[in-house]
Amino acid sequence: DGGITQSPKYLFRKEGQNVTLSCEQNLNHDAMYWYRQDPGQGLRLIYYSQIVNDFQKGDIAEGYSVSREKKESFPLTVTSAQKNPTAFYLCASSNRGHSSYNEQFFGPGTRLTVL
Amino acid sequence: LAKTTQPISMDSYEGQEVNITCSHNNIATNDYITWYQQFPSQGPRFIIQGYKTKVTNEVASLFIPADRKSSTLSLPRVSLSDTAVYYCLVGLSSGGGADGLTFGKGTHLIIQP
Image 1 (tube, rainbow over the protein chains, first blue to last red):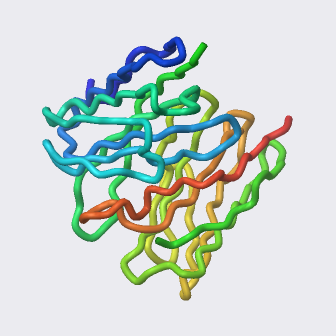
Image 2 (image 1 turned 180 degrees about the horizontal axis):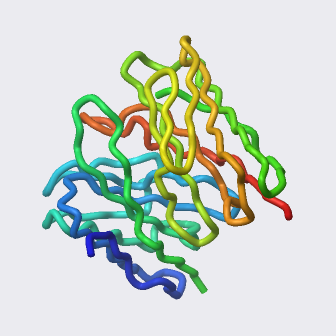
């Protein structure tokens, strides 16, 4: 089955610790994205990557870091510099098109709670 | 980046047709209009996409007037399982930018028996 997976589903972290969220896709998509969602809010873009070894900051990149060493993987690290890290984190992937919007496929999400 | 405006919430009943309108006054010539559906604690799911006039698939229709400054998502004969948040996006996700990746707060659709 093709799809996008995120792990873990729930994650607890102590304040001041870094934590890495996993995102893997086997859809052969070039582009991958990380979003953050707070209760009752829409999705906000953290980072995105259009191709391996390249990524761009989104609207709320401060306190986060990413890497894109493989096409299939786009891990997100939430650093201790992120002041309010408790949120629902969503990873997505899509094909790269040239003239049209490409559907994003989302993973099941990781709910991060900072204790 | 085209900004969208949609109602925060809507209520309807099972079996009714529901229309959710999105305003996007500064839509660009190359922008597409895309709608997603999101259930609680899940990632959004693509519903439908269009550029102009009308698009229909197995779950919804999308109506876009000639000036493209608004669009209407139409859900026929809704059921309780259609209760979700619906997002309207305008733009492109191709090329070098992040256009079209702003989800906003969406419209919370509540279907009652």
